[in-house]
Every structure is written in structure tokens, then in C-alpha cells.
View 1 (cartoon, rainbow, N blue to C red):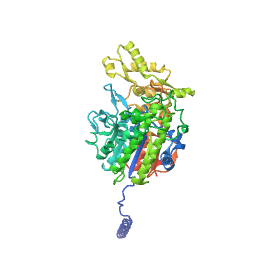
View 2: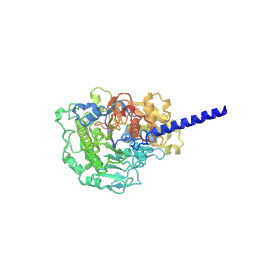
View 3: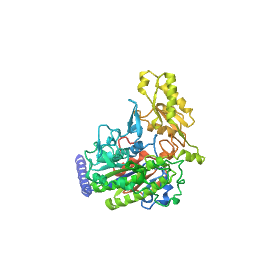
View 4: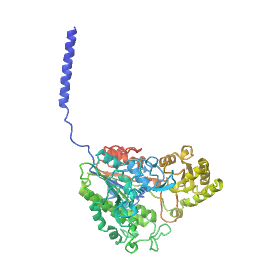
Length: 554
């Protein structure tokens, strides 16, 4: 009986072994095909682009620019910024990190270092020097950024074989998206009229950048003057061109009207190009030169070109959303983007690259424009508020200038003086909040460390928490009424608040691996980086809190 059982077991083992060998023989050989990825990813951040600009001028856009992205790509129609304040540095950082100021540390374009009370510019780095200029504009790097970017993660995933380059007129627009490990970041230096970098990245500009600078591109554009692309009478989406009540004029002009004789006005001040559509044109010219000279998209792994188009912000600040100047800027940008896509089609190959377009923030309507159309709005004098709070605190505590800054709609205290005098910070915060809540332009004033106890809408609570960096943010967050922003001028516009005009941004993907369609459910600025990471099959940035927008990816 035992023999019979042993025989059955032996036969079973032989049968299983034979079956396993058959399965092993039938299994396909390991594939040598690499993970499918695009040859190139291009990020386009249009500085100060409100979401509605996709459609405000849609009828006049060409087929190859914004319309091509909407008609071929995937648009997320309800993408919102997850924090306040809504400013350039924080926006670019959030897009590429999937993170928020509470984690990544870039709490504003400028912020107060709470430990010292000193102001810090987001990309300041005194340990480096300019490359391509002797200007202090080159003393910049990403060292204040506390987390990785999706561009860093691409470099890590390919053992640093992927090329990553950042380009923008603004240093922060080129540096922060490119990340810590970028091959290069380039930005525009007003003093020399050159595109420059810093010793953080290199010791000398590449020959192709020097060649580009030698062409004196800024002068060539400025000598063309700025005329409207189409007959000015056809600009129906804008207020009359003589709306000097709402628009800021160029130095040397009597009124903010078109055409702008830049050839006569610039007088060697090459930085003037920033406030014209030509700043965007020049940026994309350099981007084309980078693709050609660095052979981006010809690599054995994916390359990444991070571009920020900054002139829309400069023109927007000066003229506001309802001007002929901003309408013309977007019509010209649409034409430039179409030309850039055609260039990528010819060099990298249509269908071989992925591009996404978004914005770092939006912009408010000019308050006077709204008031003239019976819509509530106004400006808040934060300087006066600081002066009055300091007077109140000095009278009570006998210490002068306890409030040192109102940057980023936040009350920043002189923490060293408070400590030295042995004052109670909570009592000081209470006094300031009491003052602020009595101001007619202020909706809420919130103690950053007691946000959960504040009687405010949940959405605002989340944005305040996300925007609060203990090291770089003030002690009190000021939330103005809708339609209001801080400032002293009456022309142009700005941004920085929680309202939809500042926080609702475009987000469109197109190209390799992207579905065609649209999405109206809410998505977030923090979702952009993890979506790109998922597309590339790489790890999300280490500070990421966003979610992949799965509908976008094929």
C-alpha cells in the first residue's frame, strides 16, 4: 500500500515537472523594448493667463496654436490653484513639484525669513555669479526650493541621461521649473540684453547661446514698433484703446494707446521688450535654438524643455485684462505658439512629443473698470494698514515697528523684537486681527496657527493651510473681499488672491500619449506634475500631494 502511494506521488511529481517545463518553454523571451515614452516633453507656462483667455479670443486664434491644443488635445476645464498667495514663483513651483508652499518653501516671489526678519527673493543665491553677464541678475539658483521637481525625477529615472533645460524672461520662470539637477536654465538680463545663466549650472555659456546673443534679437524686435496684428477696430473683446483711466502708459508716451513706437522709446533700455508681445516671441526663438543645438528629442531617453512665457504678465500688469494691448498680446502669442508647434513637428516629429500648457496664476479686472460697470471692487492700502497697526501696537506695547511687512497679504512680525521685549505674540496677533476685521475691504483675517478654529469657508481654510510655510510666511493671512486687491495705483491689474480670476487656470495637454477630450470635474494645479510623471512612468516629485488626472492619458 505504501509502495502504491509512493508510485502515485512520483508520477505526480513527474507530471507537474513536465507541465512546468512546457509552460517555461512556452513563455516568451524577455523583451528588449524600452518603456514607451515621448522623445520630448515641453511645458508651456503662460504667465498671468486667466482660464477664460482660451475662449475670450477663440474666434480669432489660428488653427495651429491654442485651437490646435484644444481640438487635438485634452483640456481640463476646471483646474484651480490649491493655495494662496497666487504669485509667479509659487505657481511655477507648484506646477512642476505637485506641491504647495507649506511643503516646498517657495511662499512668494519674495518672502520674509521668519527666523531673521530679512526679505528673501525666491531664487536669490549669493554663492553663485552670472554667466554671460556681470550683472547681479545672474546670482540665482533653485537652492531655496526644498523639494524635487518632475524634471528632477526624470533626470533621476534615466540616470541623468535626459536633458532638462528651463527658459524664461524671468529668472524664477526658468529656474524653478527646471529643478535642482537641470542641465541649464536661461533667463533675460536687462542690463546686457543677453540671455544668461549662473555658475550653479555652468562656467560658460554654450556656443549656441552666445551666437543667439550676438544676433541682438531684442533690438531687432523693438525696432519693429508694436502695432496691432489686425485693424484696431476689429478688437471687439477690449475696451476702447484710449482707456487711460484703466491702463498704464509707457514712459515717453502721452497715453496708453496703440501703436507703441518702441523704436523711439526704448533708447537702449532693452528690458522694455518684456512689456511687449516680442518678449514671448524672443523666448520661443531661444527655445527653438535650444531644441536644435542641444538636439532635444533626439536622445535615447526623454528630454524636457520647460518654457515660461512672461510677457503676458508684464503687459497684463500694465494694461489689464480688458485692453487692446492684452488682446493683441494673446493673438500674437497664439501665432508664435503655432509656429513653435510647426517647428517641433518638423524637427522632433508630430506625435513624438508631449506638450502641456497652463498658467502660474490669473489676474483681476481693473477695479475702476468694474466700478464703472457697477460691479463691486476696490484697492486696499496695505501700507496704510501696516502703519496704523504699528501705531496701535507701539501705543500699547511701547515697541516700534512690530509689523515689518505686509507682503503676500500676510502680517509679518519683527519676531526678534517681540522676543527681546518679552511680549506675548498671541496678544499681538489678536490686536492686529481685531484691527483688520474692522477694515471695510477685508473679508477675513486669520491666525495662521489657528486656521482650523477660524469661521471661514472650508475651501479658503485649505488654501491658507497649503500656502503657509512656517519658515517663510507671516503670522496672519489677510483675505480681501472679491474684486479687491492691494495696491496704490489706479491702472492695470495684479493677482495674488483666492478668487477664481486669480486661481482658475488653463490646463491643456497634447501630443504623444494624450487622449482627445475635455474634463469639467475639478482638478488642481498640484495634479499636473503627477500626471506628467505617470505619463513618463517615473516617480512623482518627493513633495507631491497631487493626483494623476487619469482621463488625460491614453
